[in-house]
Image (cartoon, rainbow, N blue to C red; front, top):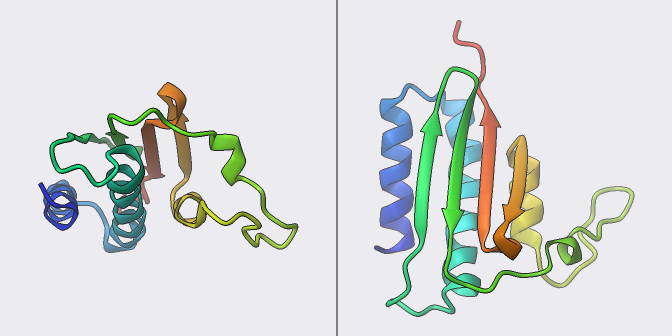
Length: 124
């Protein structure tokens, strides 16, 4: 499935779950970055590779887990930022962006599994 189609299906699901527009905008951008990274880096643009994605929505948070078949990467190498938040590396701008938009961004399995978490806004 293409990145745009997968992203749209996930966003449609989140809309069905009553996710607020303010939350959805941040999630949309972070999700796009995460899926593109998985395709480019984890799958090496190989359409035969499969990316797995799960989404959990509850009263407190929205959690998205994306797992690609790649070998991962050095997650510490993309955290080099200046005191004013400027990314000092040649790569990792998408990760930096995801970290700014989501409340939690974490990696496991050597960097081949990404968890994005957005705390829910109180419904008023």
